[in-house]
Amino acid sequence: MLNRRILRIKAFKVLYAYAENPDLSLKEALGSLEASCEATRDLYLYMLEVIEALTQEAARRTEAARTKFNPTQEELHPNLKFVRNGIAALLEQDPDFQKLMEKKKLSWEQNDAFVHTLYENLKTRPYYQAYMQEPEQSLAGDAALWKQVFQTEFEDDETLWAILEDQSIHWADDLPYVLGCVIRSLEEMGRTGRWSYPPLYQADAHDFIRSLITAAYGRYAEYYDLIAGSVSKWDQDRLYTTDIVLIGMGLAEAETCPDIPLRVTINEYVEISKYYSTPKSRGFVNGLLDRLIKDRMAKGIINKTV
Image 1 (cartoon, rainbow, N blue to C red):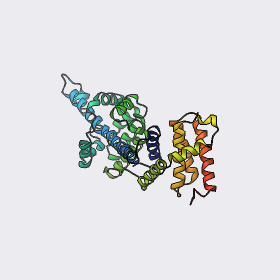
Image 2: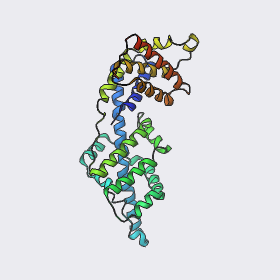
Image 3: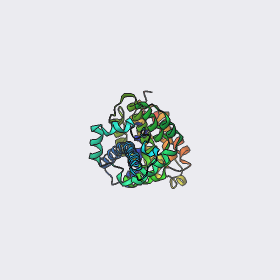
Image 4: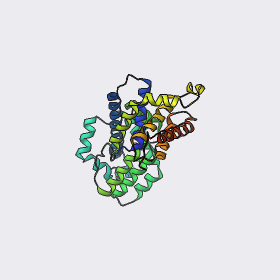
């Protein structure tokens, strides 16, 4: 589930915490990383649960309208296509999914106001109305509807961001990545009729990030001195901890991962600097990391196979 890009961001946050608190042990740093990674997969489960919560909200509304005093013909004979969507039924009937939700105590019950508003908004969307007007129902069609929901309704919702921030310190920054994971799961469910719990790490990503954290942690003091010695005395006082951590991680990756091209490594940390450092950090991280890597290659400290 977690690829190298998001793991670099998580490692950056852990190493930044170490830079701010040198008493943080390597064991604690690795433990913090593991907790952050598992939290991302919990968020994936929590967002998938929106499907059941929203479907149940629609079912309750439909039944309340049908049984009210003097219902209209439309309320007596409602369009049940959304209520009967196959994706919600698939998750509701999947024992593994239900056990995980119970074990991790993940539920939208305390945020039913958000679900209520989400359903009200959803009913106004042209893509939802087109789905409801289509007479045929299929699992693929239901999955396509939910894909549109996850593509359009969540990433810019300030209420949702506040809910996630309140639930877990790890969740807010992970939402865009998790939405992509949910969409891929929906594609699989629409194609195969099954949900599968994604492994926490993609391929060799776990070994990669543990090696990176260990190297960057162990050599942080060395990298700090190297970076500080590469700028003028005046600039030393203006160094940002975020930039030092990013450059140090880039050096650690270049030294410990011979199979990753140098330009990939540099670009990844420049990209992180755009979101977690200053407006000028992009150029600083790019230029200094490139120069330090070349110097260490010339000295034989960095050896690349690609």
